[in-house]
Image (cartoon, rainbow, N blue to C red; front, side):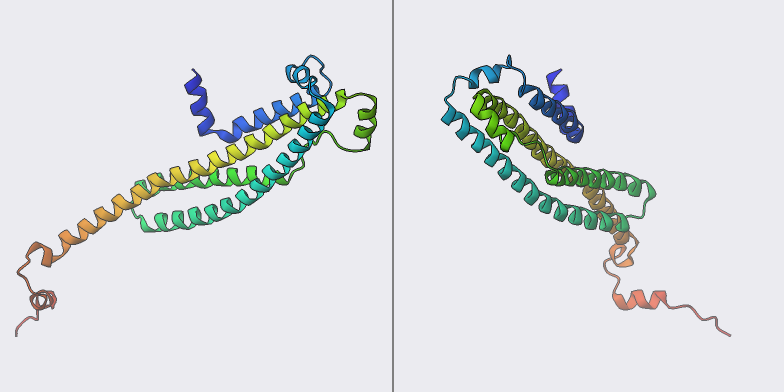
Length: 226
């Protein structure tokens, strides 16, 4: 059963990302107030300096993940251009209606996956919640160290959402390129087949001893004698 769900996740990464991201963001809000959270209990044993250091590390980690995601979006834009050009060449080169239908199906699915990955990558421009900063945080930190603990737990969960987003975008891009392979295979088979048909129709192939001059003479129209 686990393998089945893993397979579904690989096939539809954007769907799983949507539900997992919502779940993690909801957990991040709850973790800030839930004192019975297992991470909250463990992190509470750390000193104030260690907690503040870890909180700064998570803030920096979130920025680095967002920067990588934005750079990844540039790669996806190039991939969309390549896939679009390749798909156009493949579809224009096919003449058999059935082959055009199958190839266009694979090309369309490939483009959809790639665009989905691009949209996921562009979502890095959307601001995610950031915990453990601001004036109110500083005031609460003076009263109790618990606010630092809860902020650290929540920030880690938000960064997990960032990781899930990058992973899902990569999976979409990978699936897009994999779906283009069957279209290329159809194009290759059709090209080889059409090339073979042209050879069969060529008189020089049917009779290798026939010269080009004889071929041209045979093609000239016969005049009727008077």
